[in-house]
Length: 166
Image 1 (cartoon, one colour):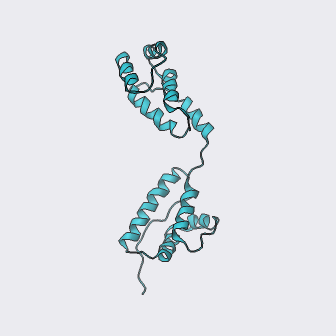
Image 2 (image 1 turned 135 degrees about the vertical axis):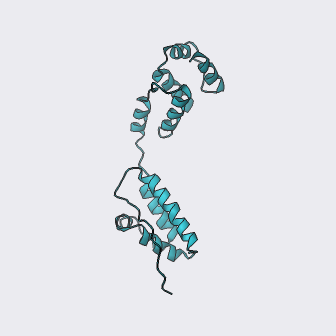
Image 3 (image 1 turned 120 degrees about the horizontal axis):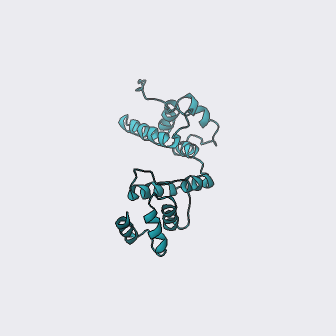
């Protein structure tokens, strides 16, 4: 039974910017396409995956460990390939260079530090974030207050007390 395939943009593997996020979004859209086309057979799913990923991504796929005809293994291999390699030292460097912006509230700065700390693999996240707030805040008054009360943590009390100072 010959049917024409719908148009579906291939994945641009040559653009490395935000590649993991772009791959995840593309893959979710592809899985939705399979649902819309009512494709359940794993062999057909794999064939459509390799058809729709495009030439540059297919070239990458062909260098990955052999997945036989298994759709799930092919997906896993591509997911692993597009997962970024972590450089923990560089992530810690970027975290340490993060200072509060002039128009940034303490809460906004805290959220930004939490986001950056995700990639640092700190053993005590609260201690590291508190230390970075003390180091990188724009408020001398806040810094002095935090140094006078070294037992403060990032728990709700810490935030409540620091907001009073700022």
